[in-house]
Amino acid sequence: MKQNFVLTVSRQYGSGGRELAGILADKLKVKLYDRQIVHVAAIKLGLDELTEEELIQIENTLQPMPISSYLPFHSFGLHFGESSTGMFLAESKVIRMLAAEKSCVILGRSADFILREYPRKFSIFVCADDDFREKRGQEIYGGKTLRELNKEDVQRARYYNYYTGKTWGDGASYDLVVNTSTKPLEQIADGIIAYMKNYI
Image 1 (cartoon, rainbow, N blue to C red):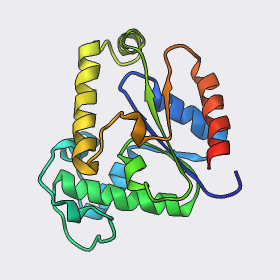
Image 2 (image 1 turned 30 degrees about the vertical axis):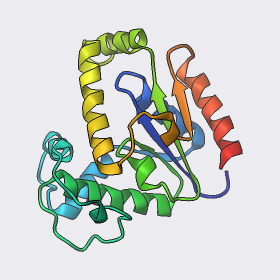
Image 3 (image 1 turned 45 degrees about the vertical axis):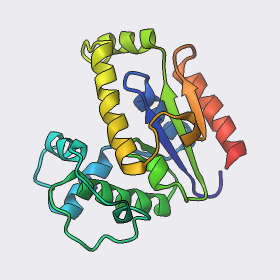
């Protein structure tokens, strides 16, 4: 693809979405952005001395914010302080900057919504069957149970729904929904890229 594009990847915990995003970035020969966005946003907020765990905690602590504050994300002149609202606005700014610079893959961070008006954005949601996720939880995520994986997804959904006004995981919110339970991730990545090239 000659023109710049952004592929956003949202995923259920334990579905292999992070690994799939990495494979997609490699195949597309572009950079993958994930928690780097949090760290750049932290610098913008003057919170760069905090640990990644502390930053993620701030990000996930929802605080009231009027809808006019985040639609359409044009202003970033205020000091927002240590709040998830500030982190969301700072991350939005960083994501828009990355999209404007060059082609990339962005994992999570509500990027599908933040870039909803970007002309060459393709968004996917990655899900998987419970048995598949539970097995990955045991083997890859330090023995996490399906209940623990679902608890993480509840938090993700709460954050996404709160700031976007949309429903996390709802197929209507994405360009493509993929289930990773039955095919190798490499094969799924090839299918996504083939579809994506015809789409954007």
